[in-house]
Image 1 (tube, helix red, strand yellow):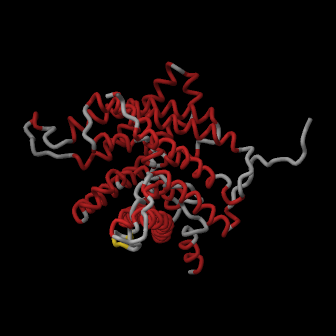
Image 2 (cartoon, one colour; image 1 turned 45 degrees about the vertical axis):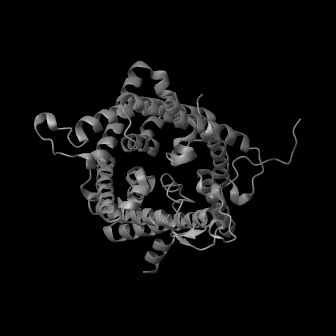
Image 3 (cartoon, chains in turn orange, blue; image 1 turned 90 degrees about the vertical axis):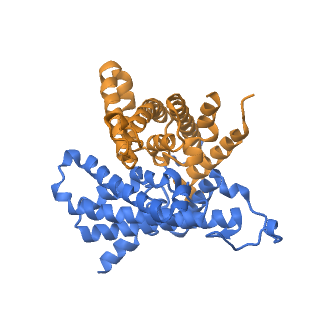
Length: 200
Length: 216
């Protein structure tokens, strides 16, 4: 279990080795404080939606899931995509309402980043990976938490580096997007080093 | 007609969705380890983009503003499911290698971005053309990155040997790092640099210019 967690954070990092959630990753990493807000929202949403999507996938969509009502041949796996997107959108919406009611300071701090997460491919990608790799319920919680933290670590690193880069004299054509890609490549290279790390 | 042509050609380089608009980078890089997967992904995305632009543009007067995003996502998701099923039926091997990335076209900002920015305000004809142009711009970048990674990482193109590798008695030592994730970031970064050296209009403004004056 802890190995799965470590793999999800480092070696199989969603953004650095699977390129998931790159658009948000590049767009919201200019300042460290906003990046941290987004990172927190990401961890919460990822840990919430993965187990919910697991239950829906397991008990409503998979072949044979409707056997208890006498429909063993029904196979709804092709609806996976729409179901997952719906769950993610609903979870984000509910989280937004709950935060607004019980933690208004955090809600204001996260601002527009919360709704933006709905279209973040890292969330949908996490759920699809969970379905493809056939994780069980406990594993899906661990994978959700791990991949969320991994994404958060990656964006915090990039934002911190970009804040320092403001004072660097970058070649004209590389300024902005170009240098961000090169920096991301370097971070990613560092993270691949964790691929060989195994627990004793 | 020349306006149409320009509108169709501009997303190829001048307004390339990936290197300038920063749309659809997610799911773009993961499939570039070989030309075959890059080409399949490009074809899938271009097809979905053209179809979704056409449908959304045809329905644009009937979509209430408040729920348009949900409608757009549902249309795109349905098209992606169809594309995925077609791939599974006729190209199962490639579909296995593309893994979840075809499904991820749903959250590809490029598709939703073009729907919001163009298809909602224009008739179906130009919208489909816009979809095709942007799809081809996306494909161009994907194929260039895929070309470099497969050629230098394996010495092959589309699975055929181009550079004779050491294993088979040739001279070429494959660069394993090209098949790992970091190289995709480097190649795309350098590609953006090359394009901006060629088209200086795309260079980003310096938000924090260094001043020559030393204070204190």
